[in-house]
Length: 209
Image 1: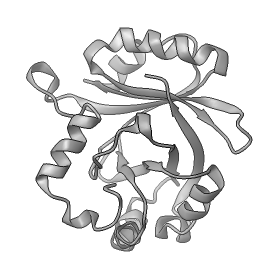
Image 2 (image 1 turned 30 degrees about the vertical axis):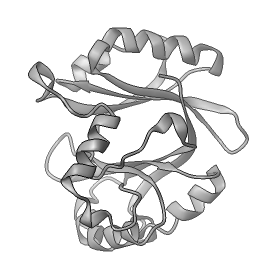
Image 3 (image 1 turned 90 degrees about the vertical axis):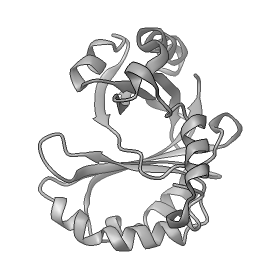
Image 4 (image 1 turned 180 degrees about the vertical axis):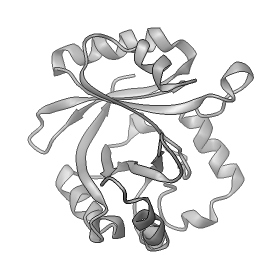
């Protein structure tokens, strides 16, 4: 989200800067491609080479990638953001070095003029309970008001439902001081308060590419 203060009043100019910063401005063959989030398990030792392999596979459609760490500084996997035409295409290009891979389409609806290489970034990765699209819709206004009042810098978007309307989760990439502080902040999300989520992971994101 846009720093999330006053994000509902985001200007088109600010949003364009954000899209450029994150590599979201596309032209030619790329302009109709969707954005995908890839989350998987790998060791810290293999993370850099695995990310580089994926970067080469996707070429200009690779956006950002980094390792994920818990509050004890233990590596918990990898997060990549890429462009692609389909789930199948994205999965085919992935390195064999990943385990328990999740590929989700990500609709980035709110952005920020943020250079992640200069920030301490944290991932809030939320997966909804099955059959909860109406609960998400009913709580959306409260969720947006909560974001608006938060003194947080980052970007946010839902995971569109691959099998129908609505969304099945969300991802927030946010600036912060620690996993614990971001987890406490995320626990105040109205979505969390109404028990929408099946799972929530809060991890530190360290950019590698």
